[in-house]
Length: 180
Image 1: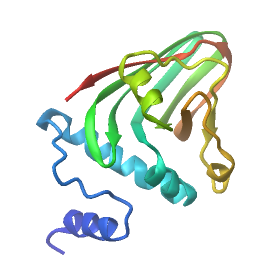
Image 2 (image 1 turned 120 degrees about the horizontal axis):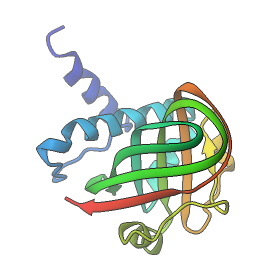
Image 3 (image 1 turned 180 degrees about the vertical axis):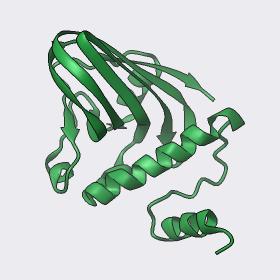
Image 4 (image 1 turned 30 degrees about the vertical axis):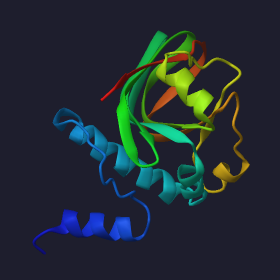
C-alpha cells in the first residue's frame, strides 16, 4: 500500500476518532506534537470508549501525550502538550512537577485535562491552575471514565505508557500556556 498513514487518518476521521481540523493552524515546529496528541487521544478512546463522549462534550481539553516522571526521594515530571477547543489548536502547554517524599523509579504516561466551562479554561490559560490534593487523576481503564466527575471545573485522566514509579509524595503539577 502506497499511503498507509493517509488511509489510517482518513479511516479514523470517518470513524469520528480524529476531529477534522479545518482552519486549525499548528505552527510547523509543533506538527509532531500535534500528531502525538491525536495519537494519544485515539489511545485514550481505545482504552475506554466512554472517553470519546468526554472529548466531544468538554468545553476544551489539553493533551500531554508524553510525560516523563522520575525520582529518588526528590522527583520531577515534565511534558509538553497542546490546548484544543472544538477541534482547534489554541496553543502550547507545559506541565512540570516537583515532588519530595518517599519515591523511587521512573514512568512515562499521557495526560489529558478536560475543562468543563470557559472559566476553568481561562484559569488554565492565565496560569491559575495548579493541581493539589483536591484534584485527582483517573487512571484510564475500561469503564473508569463513566464514573469520573469534574472538580473545580477540570477532570484529569492519566494513561501509563511504561515504567514503574513507587511514590508517596507531596507536590502538585503546574502548568504554563502560550497561545499560537
